[in-house]
Length: 449
Length: 134
Image 1 (cartoon, rainbow over the protein chains, first blue to last red):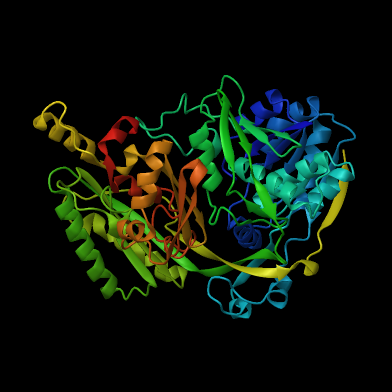
Image 2 (image 1 turned 45 degrees about the vertical axis):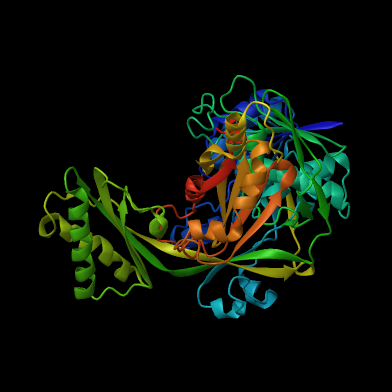
């Protein structure tokens, strides 16, 4: 028995047309959407406080659903998606709205809640993993607390007849593992099978990163038609092997190199990749190129799950102020260095109170910072990029104000942008903690179009 | 190694020299890499293009050398893991992301470009492996 499962997105800003292509042509049983980053929930909480009209779910939900619903309905493809963010109910109701609009009746949509524990996060957690301090030390600044749920509630929703499952925060691989567990009858406690399911989920969760995205390096790793990458499809067999592939006639590649890079992406110890339902063990993974753009994956297994679930705690931590201006041609670097000197003096004059101040020469050392090697020649063009992290917005605004001053009171031949955008942003720091499983109870709400 | 004199001493010396000849090459010809982020930790995978190149890669790129190559940027501990049958090393680098994605003042706050730094690391390989280089 083989299940075809495809990726519909790897993050909020991902392209939409490859999802539609997978829905229309992928012959999929399942299409899975991952739309969150580490700070998505906390950013959504902050936005919701300021903007009551914000739905609290993926802002591309309408576009994504309109792109894939016709194909998924025509091909009997079920959808698993974490587009619910802080409001899975609202997202599910919105999906129902679109289903009715296209005349699809009797489609069952499930919304999964229970992972958002903001009000109870201090009561139910203990230590901040990064600092070792009690989570109560964060109490003044917490905007969100979210549990990383596993596959179980999604499996439950599928058993109850869901065609579309909308979740909030769920561990990324669980979105893909759940349909495999449901279809193959892989149960909780079967750690080998769950290891396979979550391992395959990990390979798929970053979409095009396994089909030739985040990969090309001309002359070393060349990619065919890199402007037309497909999102991956896995053909998973109930013996625990899978073939990773993609739609024909698309750009990109599925080869040993793309699969290996993705296998280790955001993994620490490959023998102990912790997910809510199992510790995945990639250490004995074997890969085989069985055909063009087809890589067979075998040897993934799993170990007993941990006794806790991960909790992310989002905190308001201050503001970053940031701006840049430019030099070019002969002597660009010497003018940039004088500009830095002027700015450092100006920040003393205006008493900038910053936790950290950074002045980079973009085009020379802004990305690799202190490890940038000495170069024989100066760059032809350079941007002076200034950033500071401050407790308050008014302090962070000093960065843009002092960069404004460089226009007429600065260095010769300074290029400058019109200050057309907000040059500060709020910092939502993310801390981790753990919660006992018995303190978490997901709920499922059903809707029918 | 046994010296033979079948074709005269000069040729045989030449033969030995050729056998011992080594090349210094940049890692970009030996391996490819990718970085990922979790909190303030970056993991950087380094994967040999060919099995023949994996042994020199693994023996010469240890945690200490890796850390030195990222001096000033990786501020915490570096731990190396490997999956030998995939010819893959995975360096887990703590304190590499300026406090984490949302707090970092670096333009590349996810550290997506960090892996490229290791491409300039120099390896010494047996000249017989030259044919496997990119």
